[in-house]
Length: 458
Image (cartoon, rainbow, N blue to C red; front, side):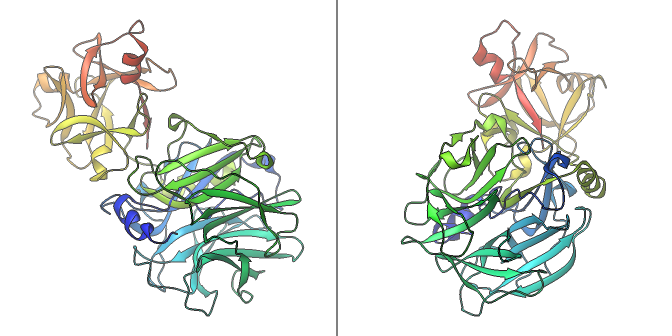
């Protein structure tokens, strides 16, 4: 969660998200070698709140970079107590191998409503979330925001750390039903927010937002005890504002640090990567390499098994729509606006303008056509080489103009390009952010080929 501008910019741009008070924590009950995928819990917001939903959302990923929202990006469960909404959900694998989810008790952006409670659920395999309870963590009239969990081996208890009154507090528990009295966990000279804690070997790492300069910092401790952390990084920031650090170790052993942007910037998330968490050597990832879930805000990530991945997908289902991400402008997505096909920086509203049903080609089922999700029956078609969104009049000309063949990306074979059905040397591309078809081939300039290359994502 965040203060001040979060009270406005989360309204302005969707906020606290893939990032989060969450992290990938390796359970004691199973070997890291058993994990082959990732799960991501979050809530959703969009710039004018058309995509706001304060229930628990779930996405999965094989690489931990590009995410598939489940349940059509609708919540899998919603709180029924307190403010009947959540923010900042953290998913954590307990020592018995099952999951617990804790989340801020807050629906919307009225950050003046200070709840002393957190929402809590249990899950065996991500196919259901049960045992819902609303647990009180403190008695002071302070907020209880952005929880994160770690196993404190010396105490033989789970620590639940959260933001309260510009410091981090902690309660301890063995069962996530009853908790110890709250105590100060981290209180440096500057105000802090959005802590995320990960234990790696004999070191406990705490990443947090420094409220004085808006940067994300890392601190560490050899014990994980309250007030034992020393900041060791120079801090990172991207765009004009950043929050909700999400630190996790990958299945391969590297490290990722996500930051949830808010304010007048183009991306909801930024990502840094490092091969050595102790070296303070974070490299900003290219946005081509990752795609957070649609409208996701302040979430958390955990590693999962094949069985858990399949259980979640089979129970909740994958999207019946796609989005098209630009190769040359990887924070831009294909959308329609006033009947014109174009690319624009995400996030934006109406956010459904970027959602497409990629159906068998209207003129040839071996091809594809793009039907608008929020204008059913209307498709992207070319007319005088320009791409428009228009209702299907079922003429042969319309069907031909609205049909494309999906081929290997002209700039990246792992992505896709779309060749026109009735102009077979022409490909879908953007030019000055507006979509059209042009004659582009493998011998065209790299910039032209990039303009005609897209990632099909969700």
